[in-house]
Image (cartoon, rainbow, N blue to C red; front, side, top):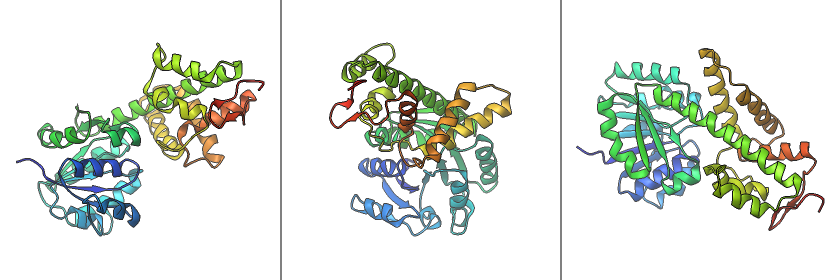
Length: 308
């Protein structure tokens, strides 16, 4: 039987577009967030508010978690008024958060003893991409359960991939994020170099998005980066946490990731500068300062050419 009743725990930058797309797809959706305003903002679209994670668990066939870190996930699942205080055999909890793979494996084993299905299902895509349905879901867990949740995820994203056993998808998300942040570093360095040299920003961006160096990051964020617009689609706070996770697993596996470690230091510098809630591409400001071109933003034409 197809899943029709879904609850979403965590209505932040990713949880809100997930819930919105579920509602638009015709699912019966309940939602909970510790910030009540985030719940009320969605009630006009048909979201049924839940008083707690426990309340959201009642009657749901599928529960999606979209939370900032593992501590929040544990609290939502095992804390007071958490999911486990109301969970019934056969219910499915699908965690879209970026979390440590070993922790999600332990949680899967723990819940399996109670007949509850746990799936790690992190997302590749920013909040703006999520709003458009351009999300890729990576799913780890029982294959039979994956087949049940795949039709739901296909309705709200563009691709759903079965990765393997519990924890495998969580690990793949660390790989995706690590690659993303190094792409980010490359884009920042190239753009700052071009600005410093006096290359026309509009022409530079046109060539970068059209040629061999094209990437989703440059296409979606390049213009904002050149204009000094660092409204978050993926904040410094989250980037610091996510990159630290991949570096930690590299250490566990005996893998050297020197470029990632260096970029993590630049993200930490941005965090210590008080830019934690800005988009992670705000690291560009650090590069600009080092290049001696800080403050050369134009209001309508991006960065002014060097010397102007």
